[in-house]
Length: 210
Image (cartoon, rainbow, N blue to C red; front, side, top):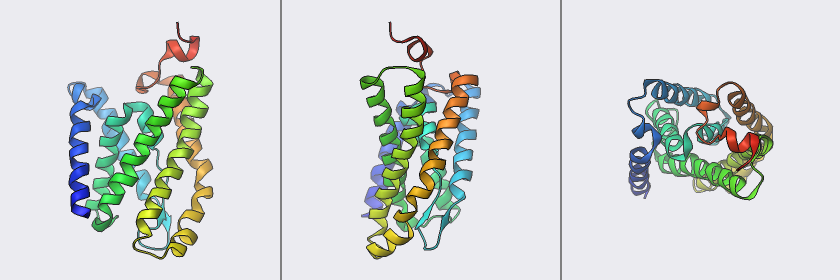
C-alpha cells in the first residue's frame, strides 16, 4: 500500500512539474535560483524539529508562503524535493513516505491554495485580506490540517493516546510562530519584492478590481 501511494504521488508530482511555472520558466536562471534557494530553506526549516518518538515530531512548515510565491504546482514540486531529501538523508523513515508526501506535502499545499482561492473569490481584494487572511491565518490553517492528517497516519503505528499526548497536543505551541513565519515573510515580499509572489496582483489588492 505504501508503495502504491508513493507511485500515485509520483504521478501527481510529474504532472505538477510539467504544468508548473518551473517548467515554463526553465530558461529564467533568476527564477530557478530563487526556487532552489527556497527549496533549500524549506529543507533546513524542516530539519529543525521537536519530538520524542520516531515520526512524532513537529516543525515549522512555511508551505503557505511557498504557495503564495510559486503557486500550488511549483510549491508542491519544491516541497516534495525537500521531503525527498529528508528521506534520503535518513531524517525521516521510508515506511512513512506515503504519509509524508500525501499528508505532509500535497494536503497542506492544496489546503493553502484552496483557502487563498476562497479568500480571493469571496472576500474584498485588498492588502489586509491578502496578508492577514491569505498568509497569517492561512499558515495556521495549513499547519493544523497537516499535523492532524499526519496524526491520523501515525495512529496506525502508535496508540492514539500517545499520538494525542505527544504530538497533537503540541499544535497550539506552533500556531503563532507558524503564522508569523508565513505572514511576516509575505508582508516583506509585498513591500520589497512583490514580483516574487505569483499570487500577488498589485492592481487588484492595492486599488481594487476595475
